[in-house]
Image 1 (tube, rainbow, N blue to C red):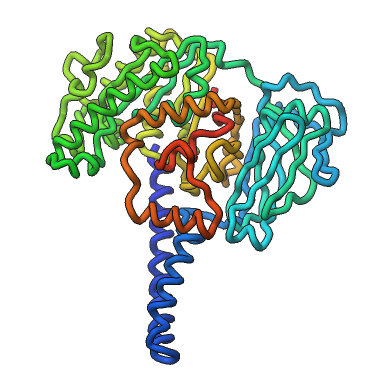
Image 2: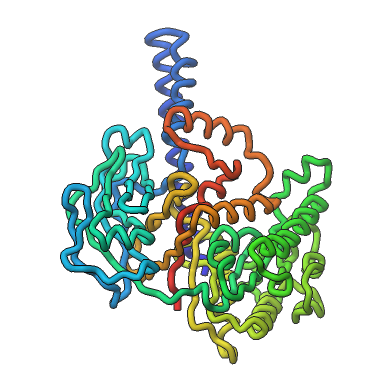
Length: 472
């Protein structure tokens, strides 16, 4: 269970170690330049070095841009022959596409010299289709474009694939994944924290025939914004938890989900792994000085098993989930993907649902996974708000992944952005250091801020696609 999370910590530890070594080498260079050349040179070089770091080297990228993504797709996916004639994608034989399929194009992308300083991207155009998908600066390897939504242009032979600050090399491989329209089924989205359902699946659940939103934790920790108001640490955490509990119940109404289809379970943030490790033991909040989850359940419209004692235990969580699944009888359950999303609460959310389903009289026909965080690249999805979402970096060829992409219109993207804007956790201003870094990157690296909000999730989540993986 904890292996992906520990891998993320190992990557961060290696990144910080390399950064310390780089700082030490830079300090020695500055001292040498001051002694051997001129006294005023070290401060000038230090400022220039810091600006260069913020512009081009501050991303948390825990792999080389030259590494190939290593995807293994399940047997049975269609793989029609295609080729690039110039920048036009041409099928060897006529394609039968309805337009709602997930289309993935494997290509090799090689950065130009400018693509080491400005984010390189691939432009997709033709007919009414227009999209761009961004990759790592200095990219030189196999990547996977998400051309879902471009079916009409592809069938007509009008889809153009052009690199900007990069080149698309070799012959591409197209894969077609057909899936039912999940929007016509009963959907339950399982969110470890308030806003996870909106980040991953607002477009899906807002269009669903029937949707349920189940949020596992109150997300009460890291309440520094509320401490700045003069509140003590525990009181600030309780206020934040109550606000996020309210958000989890109210924001889905923006998408037409009734309150009676929302549940906030009120367990404590980052305590799910400890609960899983000792299923009978209550795990109190780390910061809110609370051991009773009922404080954050006050907005629920119906009782749940753990309401009896309010104990934050794994067994209570499983009982709550079983009761909710039997109540909602979802045909599709949407939850975090345990191999792609490394957040410990997200991994445990997946494990809890799967364990709750064991032996249960109701079983979903489909389980979809999502990723709101990554192991290797904190900036994914790269690019700007409104862009498409290419497949994320994956380097485990033994992991079989079947993607499922849902297109979002501009109007749906804006509704999703407004839903995120209602979430209290995405409203506080970024730290000054981060705001300065973004200004430098905007000036020197050509990055655009999101028009919807300052928080990074407005850029990452408000896109032309929502991307899922079929787990069952």
